[in-house]
Image (tube, rainbow, N blue to C red; front, top):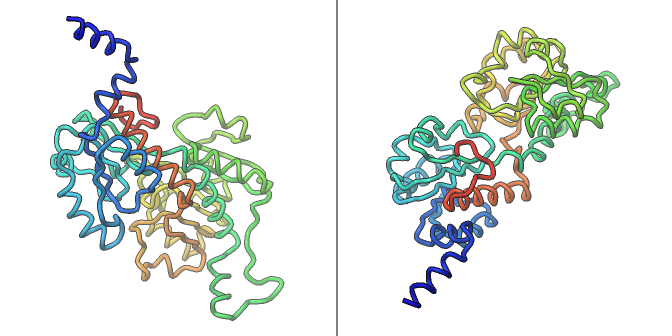
Length: 353
């Protein structure tokens, strides 16, 4: 009797939060990590609490299509959480294989268009992403793309590689950021971080558009306008929105026709925000000045893709968040979202909760 009473008293003295930890955070819970290049910092956090099963293969290229995908189908069953560092879509088949005990998909990315949100919602599975921790790094790449496209780095680097420099006072002239109008489509974390970095370049005016005005815009001296006004007034147009049915191919033949002849398009969102055939025609015909892309469709872009034949486009291989610090932060955030989901706590960066 005394022993039972003592056990009851000890159990009742454990705070609810800690009690949840002791009862649910256990090595019996399986967490699947979908790629072999998940940051060690995030892996360490997960391994302290769960049984972690990590793919031996990378998720990109031929290895991702074959070995990685085949292995995932074998290691998914019984998973309580998926840490998704992959472009493989979260399909119904994949969720069926994982099983009904799956509680969360934690994607190590800001974008989640590959995660089948309606299906996850229907099954009551939580979804998290890693948005804010990568804003600074992606904003730096946005600035790099602006400068690369405006100062014609594709052409100028080609001169250096060929050893045939076009030396002359009026040769290979670019455009100034100073005194320009910069339009941001999507003034979220990345858009705001980009505006902050561009402020030192003596930009004349910042415009932005979206579903609603942002309270942060006032401090950034950014003016809320319609999409049409942004397209017609901006010298630089920055795409920093997620890919949705609404935003897919938002830059197309019709919207490009509303832009200035000197307009430069910069995309740090997703490749399918742009109709690349329309972009190619506009760049080739001189309807707009240039483009800078960190994202394309497909990825990798084939080396014989027609966009790569153009001198007035500056393309990077989707490296927006590719710094040691940022990727580590993304990995840790994804891990902590898993811990919170499996211990009944609110997610740190929820998409579905």
